[in-house]
Amino acid sequence: MIGFYLQHSKLIDQIGINALLALSLVVSLQAGQLALAQAAFMAVGAYASAFLGAKAGWPLVGCAAVGSALGALVAGLLSYPIGRLRGVFLAIATIGFGEIIRIIVNNLPITGGAEGFSGIPNDADTRWIYGALALVGLIFFSLRNSRFALAMTLTREDEQAARGVGVDTAAIRLWTLSAGGAIAGLAGALYAHNNFFIQPDDFAFGRAEQILVYCVIGGTTSPIGAMLGAALLSILPEVLRFLQDYRDIVNGGILLLVVLFAPRGISALWKRA
Image 1 (cartoon, rainbow, N blue to C red):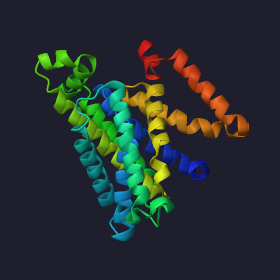
Image 2: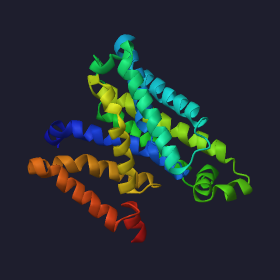
Image 3: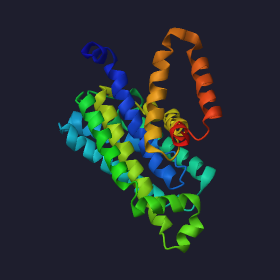
Image 4: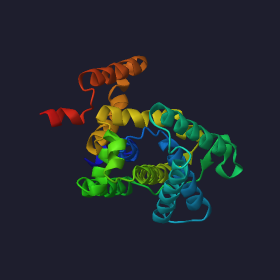
């Protein structure tokens, strides 16, 4: 068991970080927001915590707390200009915001620019990553039958009807986007402190696309499904490594089969059972 962990420790850590990122998007999707700025919030948390850890000597807990708080703050501020956008227009606007953040960190001397930021303390090990994942999962579990969860469901299913029964849908969108930003910022902080080096391309559009696919494969409104989707898509490329040049083809084919036969995600399979 110890030998297996030592051999695959980086993959195990990455699964935990990807699961956190999937949960950060599920919060918005549960309220009907197709907001794809998680990579930007992750970048904010990663660079803030990396700077505090490498330059100021802060401990991991303080770095992660600041990264999560800044992710929530940026998400909350973003919710105001995009508050009236829905559907694909919201997705495009948040993708654009993600590119703005990437360009900013790509050109700031304090972030290392295109050369990246190095010298980050490598102190976010498996215990910290899965401890954070357990904490976030516990919060999801405790809120699953709350009035806030019901308000999110009403907002997603019929926003006008939700307003008709007294739900403040604007506040729901603000709080869900901020919560997603906090989780993504936390994931970014752990990602930075799990590696010695980060660069702007780590938080490009491809990252946002991956996070969306985690949720689509697992179930767009299911926290457990999103985590399973993140685990599956993190493990699959490693399992198929022996296929070499054909790995991406087989990987895409498997994902296509999942979408065709489980269009509502993996979580729908056990619900159906």
